[in-house]
Length: 323
Image (cartoon, rainbow, N blue to C red; front, side):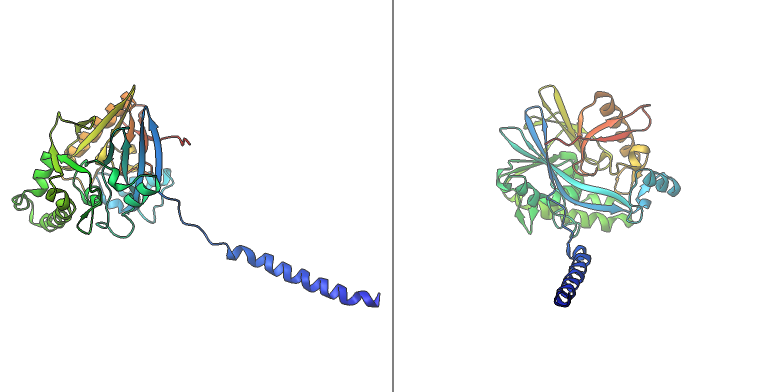
């Protein structure tokens, strides 16, 4: 037994060391970053790729016509992170029609800070190249929709023609417009216009910036006037077989607040009353007809359906994951 004593001591030391290693091991496992933000959705014969540009949190005070207590109650119901604010995504959508590659909205690029600007990166991760995009449809000219078409003065989609409604272009690009605004809104308007002009300049230089009007059809997309959020805000509809998808743009900014309370405007609306009227009309139509919806500011991938039980309040039904 005397000869076994050193062995027992050695085994005890090994066991103690192994226990220490096992106890420390979990602390060395690093958390990983989120995967690339793209999601491919099949609709009839076309493929739609949702592209995440980034995620933001809005101050609850930006939602108008709703008591702060009701905002808190609604966020709690949706298990939203109230400490950060009201979550909103920035999404763009790439439509592969088989003969054309159409980008609906383009994200923020560097216009809205470091948390955005991932559309091109995610487009590449999805298997496409920016040079393949031949058409960009803009629902409106706010920076989080237009800035992504350019980067530091160069076209991000060099072979694409960019389309926006003529009423939208006239509003933002008419130098006389700023003088028509209240004094306290002119500085913000000028800052927005500067970002818009920088984004579209490379396309204007190559005569690839064009406007459309109600009744036009672009690459198989029907244009739908959804004015209110901006004076020339438009949505786009595309049919494939018996299925239809509607790219609704900014008729809604929150999957929690504005579905439970669709009469709630947001600070970004140029005409809040008209924006609410448009949302109510479109929600009613889309809930009744059941089209698939693609929305830039609903949680990524922003594709799903609008449901209403009573025609007064609405519910966002995200698309079911398909591989």
